Image (cartoon, rainbow, N blue to C red; front, side, top):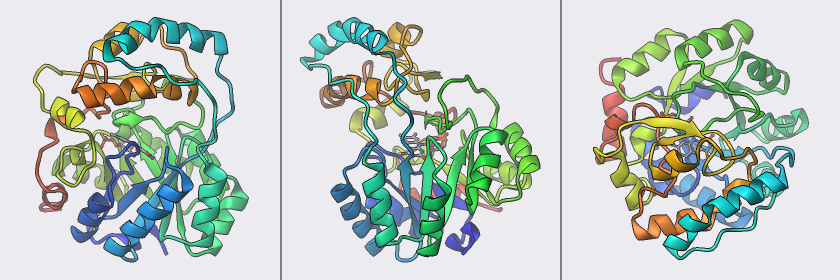
Length: 338
Ligand SMILES: Cc1cc2nc3c(=O)[nH]c(=O)nc-3n(C[C@H](O)[C@H](O)[C@H](O)COP(=O)(O)O)c2cc1C
């Protein structure tokens, strides 16, 4: 099936790893006529299987599962260690230890095997291009395959790997940029990127990044997208599993801007500018997932303590539109008078 067969209204509820994408959020987007996504990034295979079962029960026949494609182990250990030393004061203040700065593959092969053996309607990838043989196996199993791209070159590679559709992620997007490599700065706004990708490949496109109102949705559809993918505007909904601290920060007038930073995870991600970002952004080294694991206990402690100045407050540029109201209402408001 094509990606458009999975929604009645052209809204994709973005996969949001780290807890926001609950089965309830997937179900609410589904009931509103959109396509909801399970975010399997960071999760163990067993936890993924459980979440997929719960989503499948609540959103039968129409949901996706998103995986992180692991990258190469390219971090400079001494730079990561020096960064850890610099974070010691923040960790102390929260009574947290820093984590082991290790590389891992996020259980990617096991999660792929799970989705091939027990197929789901849609499988999405971010942080890299899946192997053509894996795409073929998923498609043979009946899944529609989406790949997130952030440049026209990535779009061509994903098309060659056999993707059915692409998520075109503009620089406005909240959370991690899904670039195949994290080695270059990327500032192309969504509408420009959509035009570049449309010129490069002939595949259905899902537009993501900073989409916050019905006008934004109209604009991306007019630019040729099949649907709009939204993350940040769903973060404060009751169905979202984002932490209380994160939800409250999105509405806190103290936070006025977002920026793209490697300070929390070693990979570029858009977040609200808080004290942690202001203090560490310029010296944070690249190195995902090492820096992610290094800061994970600090960030967990910040969430528990309600310390919004030390938490990774992922947010897209449209964060002001994130409201505390049911996800179905958010989806309906995005599709009024389309
Ligand atoms: C909290 C959060 C977590 C995210 N986690 C993922 C993820 O696991 N996989 C993924 O493909 N994209 C992830 N993203 C990016 C979204 O898929 C999407 O590109 C982005 O939310 C769109 O921009 P917006 O937040 O401005 O709507 C995440 C975004 C946020 C805000």
